[in-house]
Length: 354
Image 1 (cartoon, rainbow, N blue to C red):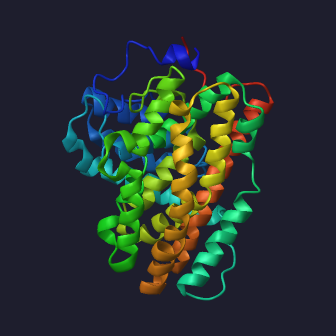
Image 2: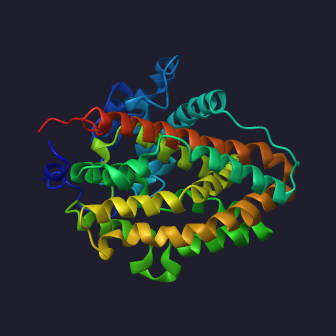
Image 3: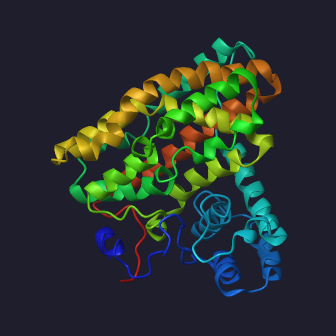
């Protein structure tokens, strides 16, 4: 089944704002789908702890789609699922078990570089910019798109990115009420731009939807969730995990700083790749907007947000750096897997039955 064929499935969600309940990818997600869609008892979720040991959370299709569903209950919701499931104790317990293991794996595998200068805002910003520079020497997905990607691979790129970009900025917005002073003001300034300064047509999520429509893709929220593999889901789930926990407010701030610092040049290259295939300015608007906006955002995020938070709460410095390193690492793993597939002349998406 192609991306275009998947886009017109009759099983699309009734609501354009709610993600359709994904298809299960293993025993844990199968039980969760039964709980959410068919009223199966939440008691059946208690056995999940027995399946966690020794599993690679980042690359596990079953566990990442499970986390996606659990987190989505706190965003737009899942189609046909009552809103009160968001705070169901059994579902919260399942989420906590999964994200505890997920966080532990990230902390054990993500390399955080040495930092000198303590919690001084300028020193923190310098370290973050150096980390971003190192990350830019990674897989080179954006350069591949600019020079080599086929028309079909452009579709795949948008499908991967749609899981986050159609709710762009929302995971980081959870941090606003958890910050104060200069860091809070800096985050609000960044997020205001992400949400179009109050203009719907300029919201970055709306611009991304416009790009999807320009390629003939379905821009409904979560329309392609079943096609997206675990490593792509892990990138978004990591943001949700950081953003939804006050304890990890340093990590979500570090993540946003890293995200903004590695956005401007890649988006320019992505836009060039779409222009190479003849797409007009209306379709590339999303990428072009980020070239300018994120060049400003990276300065605010590095100094006024992450640097100022480190000065304000020095105990959060390690988490700020961890969040940035995790952003670079997980997005790098995702990009490398996409590139490996494309260079082998195969799809980077999951194969589904027609």
